[in-house]
Amino acid sequence: MAPFLYHTYRKRHFLFLFSVFILSQSLPPMALTNPLSPPSSCTKGPGPVIPVTPLLSFLVRVQETALQTYGKSNFDPKHYVDLSLKSNLSTTVEAFDKHPKTENGSVSVKDFEGFIGKYFNDAGDDVVYAEPVDFVPEPHGFLPKVESPEVRGWALEVHALWKNFSRKVSSSVLHDPELHTLLPLPRPVIIPGSRFTEVYYWDSYWVIRGLLASKMYETAKAIVTNLIFMLDTYGHVLNGARAYYTNRR
Image (cartoon, rainbow, N blue to C red; front, top):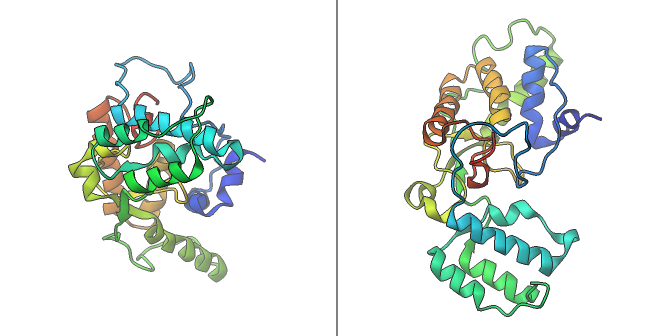
């Protein structure tokens, strides 16, 4: 099964199915890639290379330690680079370096979990719920060509999911961006869901099409505003709104 068809069965991509239903189009096959891997030759292009942030460099070290400590079976690489700091970076690095490590770079599980709990917020805590200002349960003129009551009922259930996935970055991201890998987007977003709490370039196209069908023009405008913010800030629209995507297209 093509990756895009697989993901539509998962809740975090259910809105994609809605957009495809509305447009009566099919998504082209998509290759699954590791978001932390270097960009491929086909994604490289002209433009300056943005330096890796000190926080991201440190989180990669934490990520490597987690891999050695837990092993591959209990390791989610994205989790560690999505963590945000509770205090300044220098204090956190100093505390991290004090933990004794084995030859392979692991530390005791107890020490590692204690360190994470003391110095980091949970992954995903840097986004908060945002009530969509333009959501109504059944918009006027919603899918006028769909007459089947069953299909309309299903479409309205999917339409209601917009409220479930509406978020905005926390005040900490805006005021202390150096503590986060999440980028300080100025307007609310629609997230994929699950462990993916940042917006993605490819997702945004389909989300906007669905929002327009749902008559949620202000929310769609907010997403476009965020894309323009990334274009103005980084010179291109990033693959995702995290610091580790700043050199990916």
